[in-house]
Length: 165
Image (cartoon, rainbow, N blue to C red; front, side, top):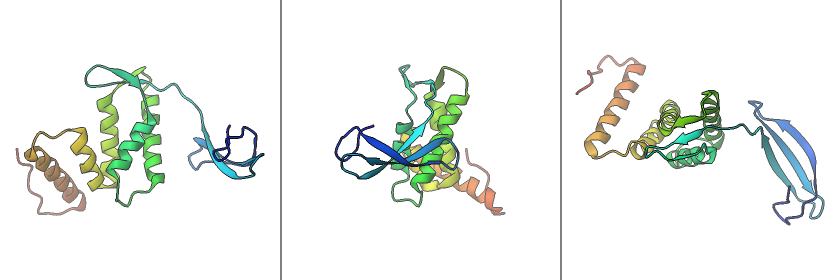
């Protein structure tokens, strides 16, 4: 492990703690050269499935891509980095628990959309607009109408109108 400040290889662990979900270990380290402190996180490396893209390409599951997409969707929204990390952890766990060696990208995208729908509707619409690549404003409006309908149903609003088709 290199020091992020002076790039020296020597350091020692001064504190270790388990994360709240017990999936990572947070370690505080001190560099033996510059004496500065830094934090590292350790996770068990599991063999993640390959993601099969719409065009048939295959690439390894990449947690960083999930976090990047969530960050873009949640930009300027009241969603903490901790929540984004938790969502990425759940999606990664779902992908690993699927048991298969491959997972369609549509399953990963749907999982992200379900999580965003639950925590922030604006972030959900942002992600959906890119993920579903709406062809025109009418498709986009249908998605918004569905979101409004579901929200009214959950709140118990008696004035809910039936879905238009």
